[in-house]
Length: 240
Image (cartoon, rainbow, N blue to C red; front, side, top):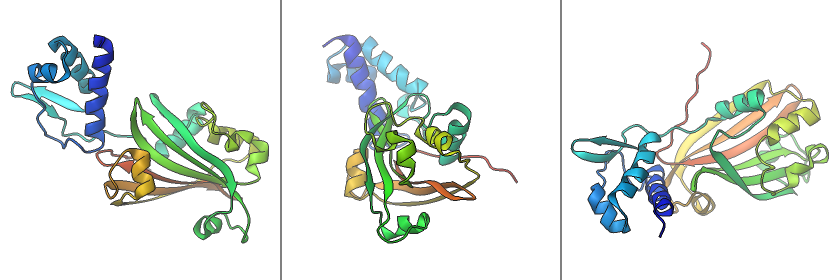
């Protein structure tokens, strides 16, 4: 196997283990020589793979060996993503990609209908997607929009690659709406079967789950339900 391809496989393998909690903070990795034997590659290939993980601050090295970093990797918060929508017209951060697995008009559950103040039987747009870096999944989300937005922004009902990033900005432009209110609700819990499958976790694995409302005086523009795997941190500043 070419060294470059193996280097990427080693990096991806340990990145996924660290981000999903398979390797706890402080865990010591095998030596470079041991990893070289395990993967059937040169020691230099192992060094290259681990160097990338060190750049990403997922591991640390010392004279005693290589360890999973104590710092928890951070990911974008809803506040970060809203700032990106306003500043760059994008929804995702540099290096993030997404795969949309569903995009359709549906009659929503009662709690979603209440968010949008809908009558019984009214429809909304439901978009489901997974976002990640490289081949590691870092976010599973379902976004809900008013049904009438789909007439102005047909991409709301598209699962085609490349249509997801910047979608909120296109909605705001097409509807002449401006997000002036935002609320996040978050709690830790166990992943259900759908969330576990989307994030590549075991059913019951710990996740951080949240719901985000973006709106204005006319009502809710976008309601999002999302979850993150363990070992990811979100944070944001706010005025006091």
